[in-house]
Length: 236
Ligand SMILES: C[S@@+](CC[C@H](N)C(=O)[O-])C[C@H]1O[C@@H](n2cnc3c(N)ncnc32)[C@H](O)[C@@H]1O
Image (cartoon, rainbow, N blue to C red; front, side, top):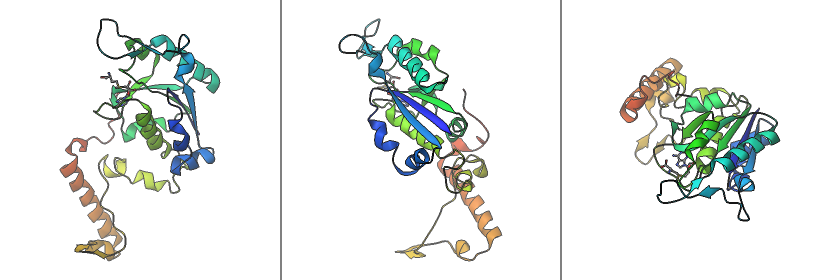
C-alpha cells in the first residue's frame, strides 16, 4: 500500500484524479491513498500569504521557506509518519520509469508542488529529492505530481490486473530499458496498412524474435539516448 500526500495550493485538482480510471480503482481497492495538504493553511497574515518578493530583486514571487516547511511537517503529523519528500521542480532529476519503480515500493511519499517563481532555495534542505517531469517549465507542480503518482501507482503490485503487463512495457528491463515493440489488433487490414505476416502465423519463437528486433531497432532509431541505459538509476 502506498500513501501519497500532496502539498499544494490547488488540492481540488486531485479530486477527480483520485477517483478515475486505474488510480481510482487502486484507491478504492485500498492499494493507494492520495491525501492533499493545503499550503495556504500555513500562510501568514489575513491573506494567508505563502509567497514574497525575491531578495536581490527580480520579477515574480517566491514561496517562503517557513510556510512550506510548516506545511510539510503538519502533513506528516496528519499522516502519522515521516514521508519520502519529493520537491517538484524543473531543476530536479528527470523522472523516469526507474524512479516510478523505486517510489512504488515506498509506504509514504510526499509531493511538494511549487507555484509562482518556485521555492526559496532553503526549502531544498528539507526534502529527500527533487524531481522534474522534463525539460520544460509549467506553472505549477500539480500536473507533474499527477503524472508521477500515476506512473508509480501502476507499479504497485496488484494494481495492474496482470502484473506481467508492466514488466513488458517500454523502459522495462525486458526491453533493456528501451521502447516496446509495435502492437497490432483487428482489423487485419486497414486501408493499405497490414498486420505483419509473422504475427499472424502463431510461431511463438519467431514472434518473440521479431518483437525483440523491432524493440531494439525502434529504440536505436527513436531514442538512442536509452541504449545502454538499462539498470542505470537516476541520482537520489
Ligand atoms: C514557473 S515554475 C518555477 C520555475 C523556476 N523559476 C525555475 O526557473 O526553475 C513554478 C513551479 O512549477 C513546478 N514545475 C514547473 N515545471 C516543472 C517540471 N518540469 N517538473 C516539475 N515541476 C515543475 C515547480 O513546482 C515550480 O516550483
